[in-house]
Image (cartoon, rainbow, N blue to C red; front, side, top):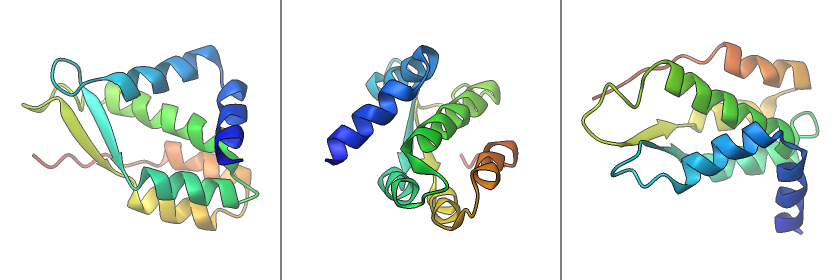
Length: 116
């Protein structure tokens, strides 16, 4: 059932969003920059169980996060190609989001703190 839910959410994404997620998932972290999202399983589980969020919004927000990280040059400001992205606060907020509009505001209020 969970695989079916994820597949259904995946198919609702735009082709560009699917491409961004796929490219990040297959990046090797050696020759290509790879963002490694800690707490990603918790984020997705919280999104799935919150009727105001759901998997489609969560995956779309993950694409926005990847876009923000790329625009901020996070992959270029480090000596290594595997970048850890701590999603613990986002996962916690996702569990508590009381409306879709509130959840969507996450991307607009993300603060990037790069620790070398």
